[in-house]
Amino acid sequence: MKTTPAQAAPAVLLAKNLKERSDRFSDPLVAKESASWIDESLKRFRKDEVSWRDISTFWPPRCVQGFSTNNATAFFGAGVSLPAGFPSWQSLLVDYFQLDRNLVDDEDLKNDPLTLAELAAQVLGNETLQQRLRDVFGGDKLPTTSHRLLAELGCKIYVTTNYDALFEKAWSSLGRSELFIATNDTHLPTAREIIGGRRPGSVLFKIHGCVSRLDEHLILTRRDYRHHYRANAEFFNLLIELLRKRHTLFVGFSHRDPEVSRLVDDAIHQFENNPHHRTTEWPQFYSLQFDMRSHTPEIFAARGIVALTPPSVLPADPATIRSHALAAALSDLILSKTLALHTDTEARLDVDLSSVISQIEDPLNEGLDALARENGNALKLIHESGPADWLDRLQTSLGPLAAQGLYVANEAGQILACSLPKGLSVARKADITSRGVSERPYFQIANSFRKAFVSDQVASLYNKHGTFFLCQPLLNPNGTFAGLMFAAAQIGQWRVPIELAEAAWQSKRGFILTDSNGVCLLPAFGEFGVSSVAWDGDSHEPPECNAGYPYQKLLGLSRRDQLVRHITKSVVPVQQDDDVLVLSSDSTYYTVVSEVANTRWKLGLSMSMTK
Image 1 (cartoon, rainbow, N blue to C red):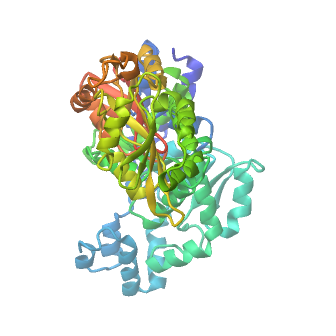
Image 2: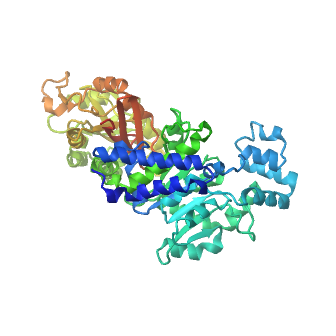
Image 3: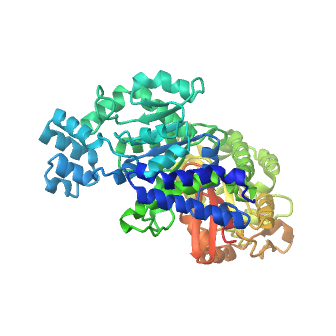
């Protein structure tokens, strides 16, 4: 898309204000360099067609959409205010709270700020501690450039752990409608009116108090936390609801606060326990993280958060590198929002993935439901040698998801009965009955966990193709394991994933479907096709009855492909992960990944970020 003057106008005005009013910020050099950053970006955009690839900071399109539709929350911490001249946490403890440095440097306490604060309260006394906090975080300091850029986003909801009033100053300088400060339960009626649109303005939740509220306690110590989070349960329940339903961007936040981490966990827990989680709002957490190491994204993903990297910057003053990088990242978010880059359908892998994954999940879940409905017949077959004619009806109804047969095994893994599709030889029945399945991975999992699932793939005992199984553990009335009913399937006869992959390949996208062993269920970029071979043990089986992907070829491809290996290791935060993998200076891939319900599979759509 071409950048029009009308589109660029808000960003041009922002850059002008940052440059001309830099003396109104506590970090004027950062303000000036941020103005230059915006101007240089717009200069590049005017020359050529601009797309999401042209923004220096990778902002997931769904995140930009959240801010564009006012469905996003900015959650900021001490890192935003530090450039204003506030002390670091260690300096606060030692220089202002007079805590013994040996305690501050103690390995067991370094990551336990609540206990350190509690010890400081014992040294100073609670009243003196409160006054010191007000002395340190009050005063007439100027807001930082990042405060101004956060205010520029114009969110309906902001959340902060900071006590200072610098964001409020940045907000008022824009002449925006009211910013209502909420610190506890008593402020909820007004906050809800604003959030619900019944009253103009925005809400700033200052969850640990505000220095401007002289009649309220500032929350710092472990004891404070215990009382505050329980006495204001309704306040925090609303926060959890907002975290669950909206996009949330963490800025200047270390994620060491245990209670804030609990709010995030509670929001995720509520989502995960919703039986309709695929069709309801879901928590979407992002966090700008400096010093990103190779394992950082996985650590944050395990917490349910997508870690994002600020751009590389070379400020005039090296001491401002973090401040400038944060300001540059926020400037890029504002540019992405202003230029509506999230509307680029090419980049909306998240939207396409949501559609694709339902087309994979729905038939698998329907297959598991069909197996569950025959649970009683399967138990009767095991315990009473009952009739097995229902097996043929069930196998037919499952179609390609039982194209390699439907089986019932007892608790020892011995096959008691099976139904084979037309074309497969009855010689298989005799063979697998003699083998048993007690040592097959899917049987072991069923025996241990006793919950319906779709297995990882293994090499077929017959045609050596990658084969997966729909598994329904059979339980006795007392809950003990009685056996397993399972359907065997191969991608090749089940064409749905292949058709979805072919559509992705036509759009020059990768289609990555892997199991928990890191093995693709089909080639990610169509490197080879389906093979049809007859089972060596019976020449009467037609090749089309054994259509699939050779397991050893899938295994070799998966071990060689860096993108596949990378996605396999990734932890998917909540519902989707936005992942960027830099393979070389001229090869970078953007992938959106999700987990497939009732399996251990991951499904990702991937595209090159290189123009």
